[in-house]
Length: 340
Image 1 (cartoon, rainbow, N blue to C red):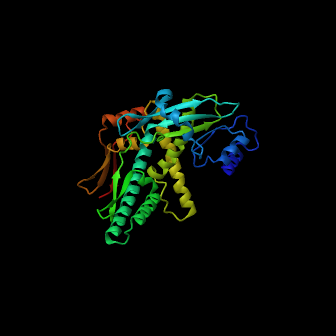
Image 2: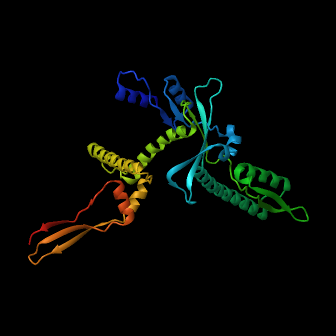
Image 3: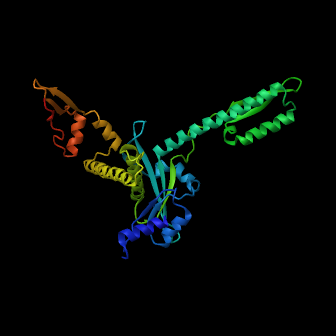
C-alpha cells in the first residue's frame, strides 16, 4: 500500500504539496494495523474496516440495532425475499479527544449470505462427525474396542476433534444388561432460531468525524464501485482469460476491456441520473431480447444482398433507450455483398 500511494502521489501531483489529500477506502484485506498507522502518520483521511474483528465489543448495540440505528436502502439491490436489502448504521462519537470514530453497520443481505455460508459449513462438519461416529460404532460391534472407559475416552477425543459439530449433538454410550458397550448414540440438539446475532455486522473506522453515519457508509461504499468495475471487466467484458502470448497484443486486449468499461460506466451514470439504478447484468439481460437479424436475398441476375433489420423494441427496451437519449439506433441497412 505504501508503494502504491507513493506512486500515485508522484504521478498525479509530482512535487506539489497537496492542501487536501484524498480519502483512502480500504477493506479488511489490506487494512492492517501497520497500514492504518501509515495513513495516520501521513495525514491521509480514511474510512476502513480493520482486519481485526471488533464486532464482539459492540454486541449489545448490534442486538438492538434495527431499533436505534439509521436505516439505509441500497438502491437497485433486491433480495430473493422480494424486499430491497436494508443497511442499518450508527455512528459512535469520538471520545477522549480521539481523531477517529466508529460506525456500526448491519447489512441484511450480508447477514443472509453469512448465514448461508455457515449453514453449508455446518452441514459439511456434521457429515464428517456423523461418519466418524458411524465408523466408531462399527469398531465397537467388531469388538475392536470393548472396555467402557476406553470407549468413553475415544468418544471424548472424537468430540474434541469435531469441536464445532459435536456441540450440536448430545452423545451417550449404550450398554447391555451385562454392562458391555454396544455402541454410541447421538441426539441432535434443537437448533437456535435466530442464528448468530453478529451475522451481517461490521465496524467501520474513519477520520471523517464531521460526517453523519449515512454519509460515512456511502463514502465507504465507493469501494464497491471499484470492485464492481473489476468484476465487470473480468466477467462481462471479456478481459479474462487472455490467450495472447505477445505483450503488445495482451496490452491491446486489456486496453479494449478498459475502454469498454468506460462506455459501460457512462451508460450506468446516465441511467442513475434518471433514477435507474439497475446493474449492468440486468440491463444486458433486458436488452438481449431486442435482436437484429440479417436477411439474405438473391435476385434473378445472381446478385446477393444482405439486409440488416432490427426487431420492434418492446416497452422495456424503449424505456432504456429513452433514458439514454438513443433515437433509432439500428436502422435497416441493405448492402450488395456479391455481384452476379
